[in-house]
Image (cartoon, rainbow, N blue to C red; front, side, top):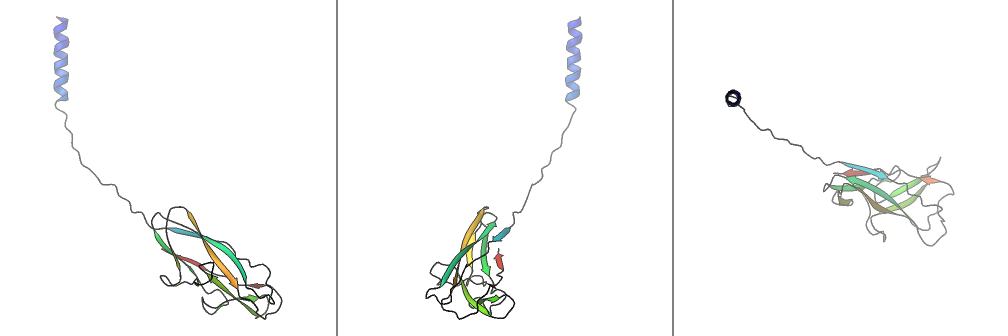
Length: 161
């Protein structure tokens, strides 16, 4: 008789589970990855300039850009504090108004000026998600008749993305 009661209990339990109900729905998970960039610039130091030398004085520096993966960007350099335009940059002597001309180029041969007009004289790139260094080629033309002293300028780097 015990056997029968256990079997009956199992049937009652199974019957109560059959009465349970469920309802479902779904929801979408979304995100938009935006273009983001950071830039780090290193100083350009020409060292000593000899105004009597027949050859120009060259130096290089780097600008490192980190942008979102596959984000297009452009690196621009302004005219500086003392130059009238990106094609006529000048350093100024400390404490006076004397100026020393210099160039910033995109190439070692100094044939392509580096400016700040996108699609005209900037350097384009595509983000990798990692820091990408880009070389800036600087040149002080030879035989500038300027007073002895320390000259400086400040360039602003702009990354457009």
